[in-house]
Amino acid sequence: MTAEKILDTARAQLGIREEPPNSNRVKFNTAYYGREVSGSAYPWCCAFVWWVFREAGAASLFYGGKKTASCSALLSFHKGQAVRGDYQPGDIIFFNFNGRKNPAHVGICESWDGQYITTIDGNTAPTNEANGGAVMRRRRAKKYMIGAYRPAYEEDTMTQADFDKMMDDYLERRGDKPASGWAGTLLQEAKQAGITDGSRPQSFATREEVAAMVVNASRDGS
Picture 1 (tube, rainbow, N blue to C red):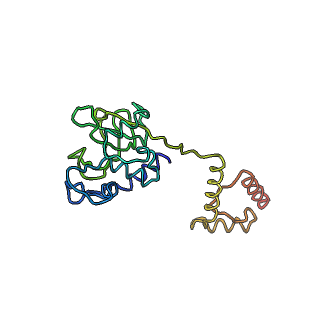
Picture 2: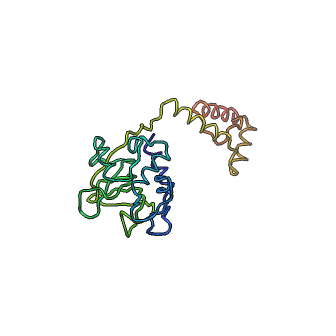
Picture 3: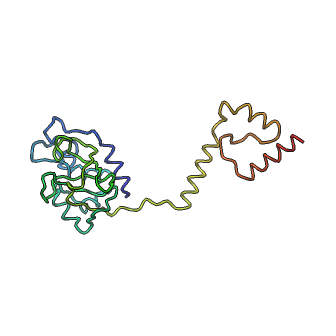
């Protein structure tokens, strides 16, 4: 599981809100508790993070495959994976907005510039950072961060063979495209003159193909 897959899953939920407002009645809580719940006893920022990891097929990276809706329990469980300062996309970030040390809110890091961190959170809003009722992208100063951990993601690496295949597929698709309207007549004239066979009109030419076209053109003009 990669950090980008987790973030893609979280981004797909942007804009989801509890209904009615201030009820904590939201699909993430329904999934977490196995039934529809509402009321002040069910804040859901941590349940949202649990849902994202479960939905992405990475429940084991959240809380060892178990569930918790407690920010404090989640931070304590992952204390061996704590990160400080060098935050990366996919890190789990804990906040407190009242100057205290206990975690009151949690989100998933999308970016970090050294001063501000951008996260995707559940149960937040500009008017109520820790209990706002929506899934949102939030940008906050580092002074509000009180902890973070990095799940054991797999590296999103590409082998040379993967790259070669990707390029071959791309060039094949590009070669299948017809000639652009402005180039159709020119390409036909070049084909009739024996400069090119006219195939793969929008693909790239190798140096050997360019050399052949130059020689063919010079022979036509001699």
